[in-house]
Length: 442
Image (cartoon, rainbow, N blue to C red):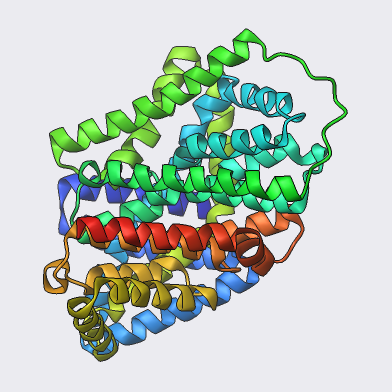
């Protein structure tokens, strides 16, 4: 029942986006609230508590502002595109699973076991390619391939976190990029080259730091016999990279031609692509996976749905409050004095709030809605890059973020060790270089 509520909510939102009928919008809000309640019941302990607190706080703030039910509805409608993206994007993995591409990735990584630095580069590069469309599922897939190899904790913590966090900076299939650009009113096409440049810089720095780290901490090479990579797997790896490129190019082309929201475009592609794949390869192959998605994958998203919806409502409710206006005025004054101090202040606010368990959506979305780039004396592009750089760093550092929780569990170390000890230097360098680059384009 919970899966049907969530999926119906997504499909009704997509209909409402194009039809723009008031009663459908009201019905979507009702469905979203029911989906939140159903997901909250199934969510894990801490995410459920945080989500209920944020949802309750958001509703109270809307009532206190005098907006009441209308404000609550607007807050939910603003976050619904992101919920659709998070729910439907995993469908893109179905053609890759059916095509046997993940077996080729497995073969590649096992072929690199005798070369720790190349293996690290392989893991981070594969995550750089897969994460933009598979989200945290990419980390799960890579870990399934390597789980029997028992990689050192430090290597797992560094490779998974560095490889995945790059996608947070540029992929339109990610909540971070979609939400920030959506609230700032920017097209993905305007931003994406800058985002890819930042993510590639992060990938290079991460690999250089591991090269230096590995010289001081030599890793034991695998005893498994080394063998060349099969030509079939080589071909499929090239096809996998092309698949991602074509997917991104298609999304940007559709956005340019139609001016639709990128979140809506990604959601539509996530639905249409598996259907086309099923028509070409046969429904008997993809139908069981669609049923599995409905019955297993969607219910597993309870934490994400509750956290995203409650954080989105809270961010909307905070907008225009005395507290938010004070922070905005304070940051505006700092920005006029020094962009460097402004950037550090924004980064400090986000890191502190997320480090205590509040989701990035709540604080970054609130800043995106509250701050005005023109009043700050900077460009929308600079503000978007700063917010996304901060989001990426906070996701890696916060022991309560989904990324940090998963990687720390895989590596067998605490979230603090995963973020600060294993990746603190990399994140610090990225913060310094990232802010430096943004200062050139403000």
